[in-house]
Image 1 (cartoon, rainbow, N blue to C red):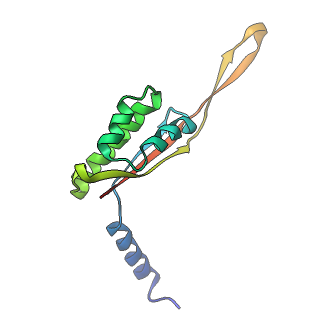
Image 2 (cartoon, rainbow, N blue to C red):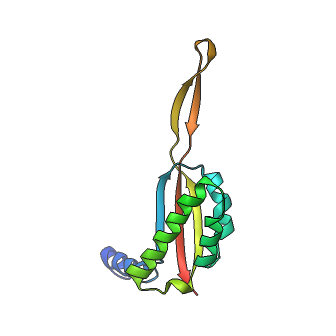
Image 3 (cartoon, rainbow, N blue to C red):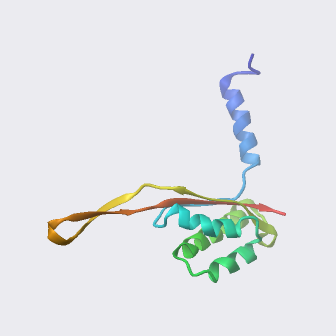
Length: 130
């Protein structure tokens, strides 16, 4: 049987989650394909913050600017909300999931139309300290 009332069990579980929480940052509905973002996230996963930002700054990709903002936001969250030292942080988790697709129509010759799909993604970055 259970060790107590449902609300007590939930309260204990939520307290454990709060203690083991990692600094994170999200970018929702970014106008980048999730596959293009994953290439850069694979490059920076497991790297120190300075090294990851160096990679992102000198990479010529549209997704690098968006991912750089998310990394800087995660570092600011770690420093301000959790009191962590930014020099000891590294990127523990970096994911890009598929967001909703925006469907647009472009005119073609002979009165035809072409469908254009603009893809979006949800980018998540979690940090940890060494």
